[in-house]
Amino acid sequence: MTDHALGLLRQDPRLAELADFPFNFSLARAEHGHVEPVLLASGGPLEVMAGDDAGGTYFVCGDGSVLYADSEGGAGIIGSGVDEALEVLIGLPGWHDCTRLSPEDGEEKILAYVAEVEREIREECGISLDEERAELRAALGFPERSPVELVGMLHAALARTEPDYTLLNAEEGRAYDLIGPPPPPLWEPVLAQGRADLAALRAGESEVWQAVAEDSVRRRLVLRAAQFDRAEGDLVLLRRLLRYERRSSMSDELRLAAVLVGLYGRAEDLPLLHEVRVTDFDTACGLSEIPGPDAGPAELRRWAQETDDLFFGGDPAGEPLYTWTDLALDQGLTSLALVALIRRFDAIELDQSLLRRADDPTRLDTGELSALADDFERLGEPVQADRARRLHAGLQDRPQH
Image 1 (cartoon, one colour):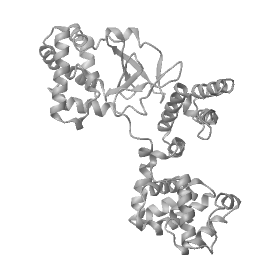
Image 2 (tube, rainbow, N blue to C red):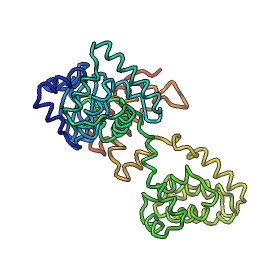
Image 3 (tube, helix red, strand yellow):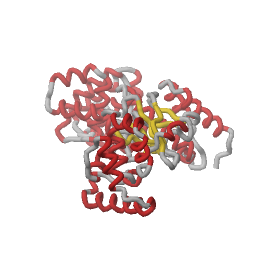
Image 4 (spheres, rainbow, N blue to C red):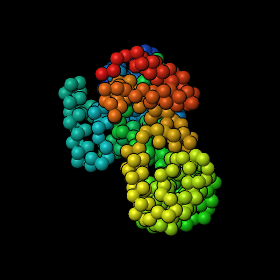
């Protein structure tokens, strides 16, 4: 996307005045900066471009995307370039209210909602709005787009905010809230490779089998994908994955592979499970409860079901956050993991009851804070690590109720 329109606004005072009123995009306010120092969690560049009369700021990111940050701690991408963002602002002068809309709402609802928002703007500002919009669109070379199309553009832009454009308070390290739709759950992008590999393995693609066999991360992801997509015909596939995974010695995924095989309750799998269990000292300890090679199918199935209920299950939303952040880091999805960890710490900082122990709600388990500090340190985020350590130290000296 280009920034042709921005150049025209900077050159023509009349156009800049129109953008400022009634479309609330003021180039003059850029000199005041944002209400507080901010930075992107990804470390990318930010340039203040304009502001609005509510204390909000329009930034240009390194790739040209336009990030809007309000004065209340919310932020979101509103365009892949300045021209696109200005099209949205001019076509939807009440765009802040339109962030709650999505293309799925349908044409009738979108048109009615936008019409009501614009009616209020006309009454409040005492302007026609249509004439100003037509003049500015024509001068900037923008096509006339319907509110439905513009809402779709805005929704798509806002959905790109996390994780690459997550905005942080530069002094405190806290993340701004998203002003658009929530991102997909963390496990969806983390499991994408595993799901694709699982489908290929089910199809018998030999090249994928070889790649998975040689790559411990891809094996783990395939097993996690199989955990949440259990198919009756997977037993042969799971046996093979179990043999591959034993190369990593004891791991959560090795236990998972054993459980998924054991759930079939086939006595002929007991020798294989015993062979995996005695791979080395760590597997002998970690898989010590696997029934012996002389056990029966019922005992095998009972062990597998109990272990599945205790450690795994079939709902990815039930997995600890750190399952997904670890797998994200292992795949190089660093920004995704970092933002998830920052948002988790922000939530704990605001509500320390999240640390209450399940077995004794009167006490806090602060071990998570130490783990967060270690993760932040590993990610090269000393500010975030210090935040976690300070809260951890503070809670040690505070009475728990």
